[in-house]
Length: 313
Image (cartoon, rainbow, N blue to C red; front, top):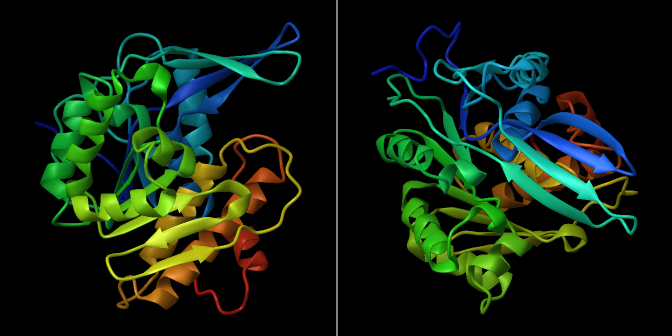
């Protein structure tokens, strides 16, 4: 059985587990491809912030895999052993209509080799399709089960209904994973899909009752809420001229992890939650004002933060 750190040059502060794929966007007869996948975007965002990060994923041995690996290496994110496998790399195809609406088609085959973390990172992040889609979802769950009492575990379900089974099956998988996590981040759309009868704050309370310590729910222009068992705060969105919203949620997640790494010994006290929420909201605002999944560097993020917000480094 291999370790998620075998043959890596140094022990990463964060290990991200989940899918990396190529987004294929077709509009007016023109097709453009670029690296994507929520977990890969989070890893890339952490790399842009200067965090020593590694990604455990499953990509093929084709040209698209080379593009993904080069993209990640450009911000010093390494692929962990087992991430390259024979076959084709997953794709998510978005066909844009004249009114701007998109129809998505996924070609995703998710599998992982048996792995065991021997030297754990400070934060282990898992997300999206990889936590739901068999057979690889079983390996992801096993890693969280082995790790959750030994490092901080963060989770973003990033719901993609087109790739999930029934609603009840998907919610059962999600609720099975939550007790293995410390931090769950989800969008209000994710929360509404999982819990259509609950408001975002009620959904957050429910997830806390399942066993997580901190739940963050993003609500677009309405900001985000961060909840623990004894605190619930709302952090306003940072005003920004929007080019598009691609990658905003993943930038929020990456900045949230970045802040957790530097929070010191105060746990999730209210001032810490305020700083974490402001940090993540600022990162998302920087991302939406420029096209594509283009998260901020640490210098860009520092430059736009209010003086009272503390960040690592």
